[in-house]
Amino acid sequence: MLYIVGLGLGDERDITVRGLEAVRSCSKIYMEAYTSLLSLGLDPAALANLEKLYGKEITVADREMVEERVDQVLLEAADADVAFLVVGDPFGATTHTDLVVRAKKMGVQVKVIHNASVMNAIGVCGLQLYRYGETISIPFFMEVWRPDSFYEKIQNNFRLGLHTLCLLDIRVKEPTWESLARGKKVYEPPRFMTVNTAISQLLEVEEARGGSAYGRDTMCIGVARLGSDDQKIVAGPMEKLLDVDFGPPLHCLIIAGETHPLEEEMLEFYKIK
Image (cartoon, rainbow, N blue to C red):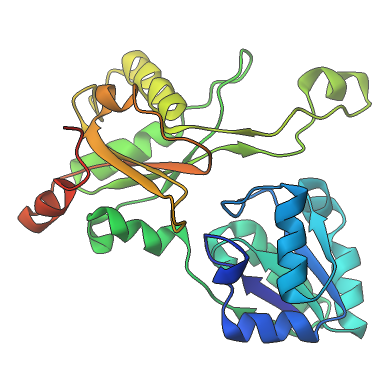
């Protein structure tokens, strides 16, 4: 059996009772660590906390392993119980849907154990979940690559009066462009996009596109470490959020659409004074 277990958003304690029972019953445990991270990040001490609570050694699965060598995990699951741990909910990323498809094609049984994810926990900021449009991802801009395909999605949400949840890039064990050109991989230090960087990039795209999907005065909500004891939520015009220190990762951003009076009342608790 392959168990795909959601870990929630905070720390090692956010796993469900059902998820913990599954993990403790498995002979091999993998933890996916590139689509998202727990608030405790990749600190070795934090990983040790997971292993202590779960009572199992955990193998961290980076992007290369998940995308290129995942068949190894599935072959192990064909003969024994294997757990694949995912931050948030297992289906918060298409990568994990692909994992289920591959497993089923190989005849491996799959059991999914759900948990909280950014897609539902973001309701804490006060904007109602059914008033969100399509979720977007914002990647880091580079000198040679400045993708802005997300712009049309924000624009479509704006036209419908819907909010846009922006998931911000994380880069863990990513090879540098130069090393790829040389044929020998050298990895960048881990990087996590901040709300501030996301807004800077969004404003750059709006200036280039000129489609009025949003502007410096557009109401936004910056969120850091969602689901943790020290989560931070700040609402205000896009331009003013540029100056807010949101602290350590992970961050996300909401571009507000049309707001209901109850939403506005809730946002007052988080607005920049």
